[in-house]
Image 1 (cartoon, rainbow, N blue to C red):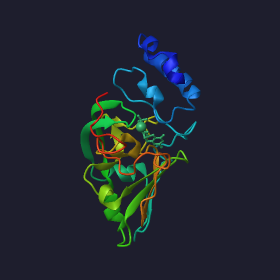
Image 2 (image 1 turned 45 degrees about the vertical axis):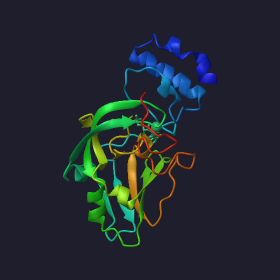
Image 3 (image 1 turned 60 degrees about the horizontal axis):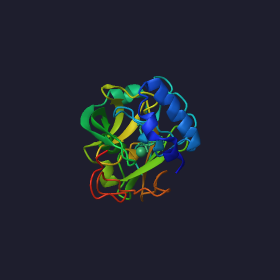
Image 4 (image 1 turned 90 degrees about the vertical axis):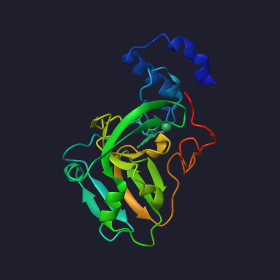
Length: 225
Ligand SMILES: Nc1nc2c(c(=O)[nH]1)N[C@H]1C(S)=C(S)[C@@H](COP(=O)(O)O)O[C@H]1N2
Ligand SMILES: [Mo]
């Protein structure tokens, strides 16, 4: 395949982060923005890859960011960043695992439990799922209501103990600890309670909707690289 012929071995001698980023953007163009993570095969010392299925994403911050909770709920609500910060925060530390094989061990995420926002909204008995939309205007994700109510699913304001950066989906991203990282929608702007699960962006393109790490997407074991 094309990327293979570019020679990962040769790239291995180049370690400077800025050079790395340059290479990744070049490879991204070659691979059509590399949305699933072919550039994730590049060496980068175990860090994160930047993924976006869109070419650009607006920057939203302190005054412009909003998160809407609506759908099959009794009390639809729109949160500002300050609103979200004023709610109880939960910090979790787990390995981040992308389905393409890269992993970042023991990464702290912190934010509001999704279950708390759902409880505040008053989920109706007809509901069975939650759909997530993003202010990149393209990415979507979903969880069953049971999955969404797990203790290890956050609306994250912090990643690695710092506010979530724009590249990582800031100011607010979803964090679904037990699932492959594609479930953790970046640039989260909408939480809609629905009756049924609807496949998200990558799931319409072949990934499993139930994305448990090590138990989905054709894997029997958690990947080791
Ligand atoms: N809005 C949005 N969220 C997204 C994606 C994306 O392209 N757009 N990519 C997903 C995938 S495949 C991964 S591995 C992670 C990457 O997060 P990172 O860019 O912070 O490393 O975000 C997930 N959430
Ligand atoms: Mo991914």
